[in-house]
Length: 443
Image (cartoon, rainbow, N blue to C red):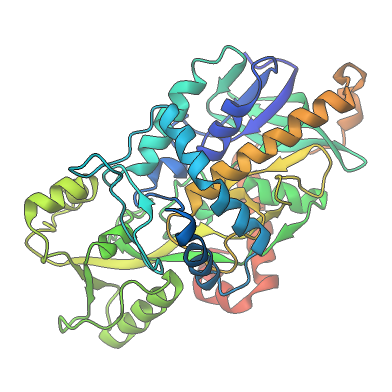
């Protein structure tokens, strides 16, 4: 049962939302909602890993790698905060039971991905996101102060005079207004708006459409990353990601003549552009990825999930090339926040892919996403708890009748269509070239 009011509402059960919930003092009542099942977040799908500052000698290199990948449009303070917080975050994940791969000496087994100058990425096989989110979710389920509600869609926020005071949800076909002292939007990106995306189809950018409606500031909503390598398929639905860590372990990209045509470890946008150009020259919808340099047993040990999925699709990574093609993957922009997750609306916070604090710039460095989500979710909670204590917010004085002007959604399908149009028009207004290349057929 969803009650009428909570101290904090968290919209989304991915890494950012779960970590935020775990960082909230157990004296506060928390509601977490998700449009689908608890596990079906894009965080769960993350294959490659999570970055960590190796030591002080690695700082300048890590900082430069992040800035260079982001085309130097990154917020330097946000990058600094993320990197400096990384070791503490990894320690906390391990305390929550997260198991990172180790080498024969018992030390962390680091890997490397595109645009990284060294090996600084922790991983759990090729299912790092699943390992992290499943362990965080298991800990959340132990908390008596946290209510979890699946198949619950936020359709609007309760707002007066640019102050957020809760949300409106559609739960099992019923509309309900739920009051809250603070709201955290951790709804992920907008991949569900694209025909080809690595995201779950229900990740449709609802928070951005609601932000546009209420005048909440967005930033760089057109900074959308296209991942170079997803398994080519004519089937409908989510595209299966072939992690950049595969290329980090030596896989190469080949054209129709079986010739290598690009440095596979360049930033994602550069590799994507090279693949798209090569596909046009070859007259094909894909190029090839080869991992034939790696023995079968090594592939199965390092990339068991990818190997099994490709096998189900009829491709044996250890014996043949596999066809890959670019697909929408990640949003670097989003709802504008400061380095504590505060948006331009009071009492409303954003974290994870939903938020844009500038850490990624124009193009995210591989495996920074999980780290960034956790770092800034934790920082947001520090501010939220402080503000709740200082402001002494009394939800009893809030009358739901004052929000009768908010849209009550009766048909979710039409609401989704309207949201999609609103978001894509926003993207078009910022970047016509990107819109024409990747979005035009969708609107």
